Length: 129
Image: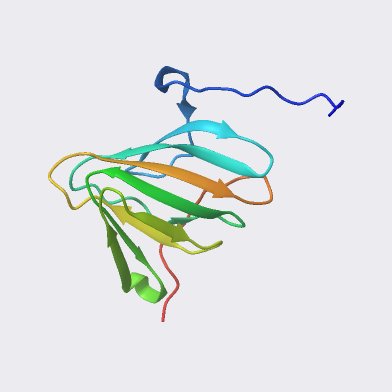
């Protein structure tokens, strides 16, 4: 392996940068490369985010603490709920919103894979049925 490689890096909690904004969510970016985005997200108890999607990026979410409810599909009629230790997969372009139905903050880790460019698009709501 004679080629020059990028170094292995660590991002501590103090080293995270503000991530893409969606009302109701505190996204903190750890890493953003041409094909991946990863970070930490905190939502307060009772919070409901704005509707959004991630364009050509698919997302995997791991719930650390609290609870995550996600609404999606026509009229936002489909719902999944996850708790500590659960993973959620969000397909490319899926319009959704998250909420925290627990009594305390919810902390999640998000990893996105895609083609680059913007990774979050806020919208008025889901498509109509």
